[in-house]
Amino acid sequence: MQKTILVTGCAGFIGSNFVEQFSQEFPKTIIIGLDDFSTGRIDKIREIKKQTKQFYFYKGSILDQKFLDKVFKKHKPEFVFHFAALPRVSYSVEHPLETTLVNIGGTVSVLETAKKYKVKRVIFSSSSSVYGGAKKLPTKESENFPDPKSPYAAQKFACEPFCKIFSELFGLDTVSLRYFNVFGPGQYGDSPYSTVVSAWLEDLYFPGKKKSFMEGDGKQSRDFCYVDNVVRANILAMKSSKKFNGEVFNIAHGERITVNEIKRLIEKYTGRKLNLEKRPARIGDVLHTQADIFKAKKWLGYQPKIKFEEGLIRTVEWFETRKK
Ligand SMILES: NC(=O)c1ccc[n+]([C@@H]2O[C@H](COP(=O)([O-])OP(=O)(O)OC[C@H]3O[C@@H](n4cnc5c(N)ncnc54)[C@H](O)[C@@H]3O)[C@@H](O)[C@H]2O)c1
Image 1 (cartoon, rainbow, N blue to C red):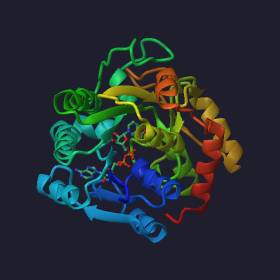
Image 2: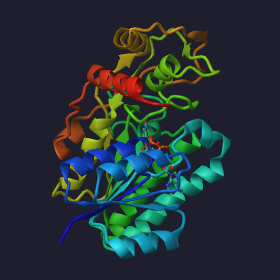
Image 3: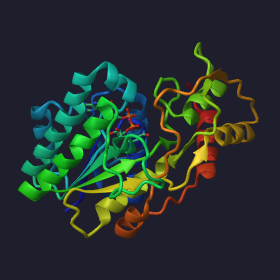
């Protein structure tokens, strides 16, 4: 029988990159995509449909259990990649209830349906935000007990034990991947929560009313992970013959880069000069992030193959050819 996978949030940044790359690597696998377009883009779905014959899309919310039931019953997916979320820290601060319903309620709803239809494994998109501030760098999963500092971070953290509980109580295999600062093609920079990479490139290629800014002295550093590495980690988590039972993994580049260096590289690869407004450092902002990715390397065979600079070049290319 033909393999079937289900991807929630397939119209979003990471979900759409995942579907495009997955379909190239596994052209015979049937891909079922769901999204309610709360932040995702319909034009992306049209593009994917043109490229991929084996892709079937359903518009609907992960909060709608009847909808989920209908899709799972019809397609009986073997693996579920759960990207759907309202993934914005600032939005979660303004809308704690709405984001809790989607990010926790929606995840439990996906887990429950996956359990009912005997899915082999659910791969959950968690976030480095669960750590709060970095206690030890590079940050290991085991040495840094989560200390969420926003509703979004608390929601992501809450889902990890839910995944584990579904494995322990019901035998549904689950794994949580904690992504660190993902960037790449398909990430639009015109929202308040985009990364500096996408926000600054947006300003260079599609300048709007809002001016780009630099907070603090630019010496703060982040572990930026190119989106293809995240896609690869998801595929490795699917392919593994291990039982994960809710195990958690950092998925990152494993190196950090300062904001000043990002500015320099963007100017180098675009040939354009960034005029950034100077702003004071954000109170409570984490100064540095850097993941320890040893566990993902050991268990999943994960390697962040695309380094920051190569990822940036590919992202610049996407901005160069983007229509709007
Ligand atoms: N981008 C990052 O740096 C990053 C870092 C850590 C974790 N993550 C996680 O990775 C996942 C994907 O993030 P992204 O950056 O691609 O975000 P995104 O906003 O681009 O994609 C999320 C998708 O989920 C969809 N969605 C939201 N609510 C839904 C609902 N109720 N029903 C169905 N679909 C719904 C949106 O329409 C969107 O297409 C999220 O779970 C996010 O929390 C992202």
